[in-house]
Image (cartoon, rainbow, N blue to C red; front, top):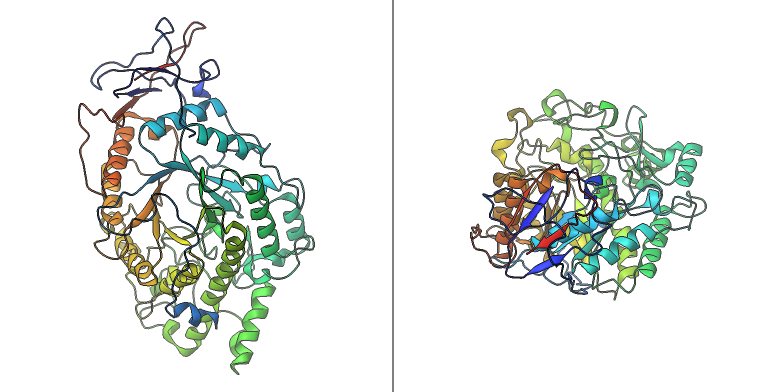
Length: 551
């Protein structure tokens, strides 16, 4: 793989060129920089050229959430205050899911170093990485290994980039885009083996080991600690280990609150073919802790029979709303019983988020790092009355009710950025039978976050490299309707991103976001150093060849 960069600077040499000579271990190809026009053939610069040094700058509770509450801003994050048109929107890029290996080491650091260099040259603000609970606390309770992440943080700092870190308390594997498998820590899985009720369970008894059930948040079920205590200890350990980098290099902590790090129930698991798009999913309230809570809620209002289970006529994972008595157009989703159940179900999710964010707020207060929380973009069946797929995931959003405003207000209590997905999607790209409207959903979330007076950040839900997807993000980043974006994180860095047209689209997108979402054109004589062209070549690297950056 060859990168070519045009800028007004002179020669630079990749630091530690000897160790950088095989980035193809990470992506296939050889990485180097050359000062050539995009129309010319890409060349490898040999070490006969004079090398110069590259220097880097050092660089219910539910009702309470519905009431308007003034958000408490915890910390200021550079570049993350743009809620109006024409404000710069910083772009981050997600690193691969397996950036840190199962052994706790940074994977292929030489190639990572070269990749970060390219991203910095393209104008990226920073990168995002998952700090997996299943890797860091793998060796036993309260035994943390942050060494692989420490190496990454120092590398990011060297390149003058910023870092978003996700506190990933969920399993990796079994969902859209999961390219590797990282289960929960072995000692936690042993507790689950001894007590299978610790994980979410559907009506048929199927257990989901992606994430610990919120039903036992406050019970000492994990080797004598509650899940909230476990998550708090983990975040506290991270804070203590990286205290010197928080606020300067590590600018954001995204707090995981469920499957895929999102505040939701695992209602649409793809593993083993359980769910397929655009199925409605299933309610996940059948472990004993959730059932006990439901029973208590029903008894509290004198409706004991309402607490025996969830809705009996809500169908199965891959059905459509009209196939069910509960979700169909004039179904029982709008009944008095359904209102009770859905308020309880969504309320438990809000309480879970509130507990974790309260803990995170206390831990990271005063560090200078911003907190964020992620909400899933469940856009299928959005055009129906019941919004079935959103209901099973825990978002009580229907034609008659706004399910995202309570979430935004809950996050606003803690000064947390609301991070939302599917920013790249257009309604016209979705299959007709899905009754999907990602654009309508994004508009609703933009209005909810504006009403709650909190910041909104975005991500793309699926891997996209085309100009159309980038154009849609540019459109949604503006505040024409509701909140504009305060930041955007692109999913994700991989080999395809560095291919010629894909790379040019990314650079164009980053430049446009820096201009407040305006669709700018890259100049043929761009002297800012942002106009990169990338292509792939296969060439054996001789002993006397060094990757040199000619700028």
